[in-house]
Image 1 (cartoon, rainbow, N blue to C red):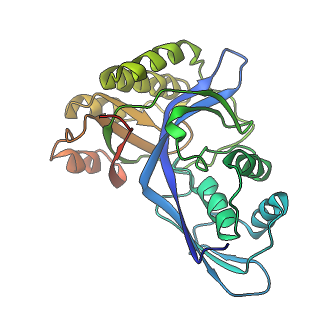
Image 2 (tube, one colour):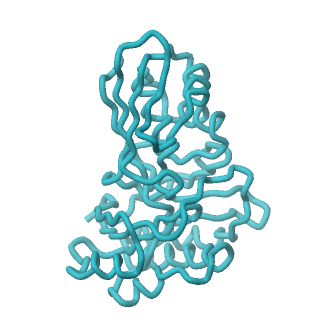
Length: 273
């Protein structure tokens, strides 16, 4: 059964991202972000057309390829709108694909939808899963590598810094994070938010040291505002600070804006406590 309007939540970068071993797959732990969504609405029309308010979320060719892969009929005129910038590292492109599939009536397994998205865009975020934060996800293979413990509740405030950058599926130049995974699982099982936030910051710092410009303010912002840690889009512009629930300082928005972050967003994540 088709819905008239579909909304799909994006994510806000990755709590962890890197190679699993020096030559292993690129894998990530996504940070779900209900505050940033892609919406898709359907208007009657014989042929598929896409309208995206100039955001270039998805081409008609990719939409058709996705629907063909899933065995779905092309539904008509689709209006897409994203609450996050394309290339910001907030999952806009994958969220658009998931929204189109659901608008066309997809109700099948999320893993099948993930493979269809991967076939279309070459690298995919796990936004079709309800529990993305508990998945170690191979983004270039569209596969779940491991199921991880549920995270304790936490709060994030952040924005977008620097130029946007779309994900290149062929890009595998990420640091090895295999050493972080056992610590991550142990901290999550213990509900140790401080340890998890620190591990997220370690992963972010490795990527920034390897791929960044050297002018990123995220680390100094975390220290200034007393954050437990920080999270980034390892490909993209999203930057966030991690706090205990209710722990975001009142001055945080102003400080982030003064540092050059735009599109400030604040949300809660995690599932325990």
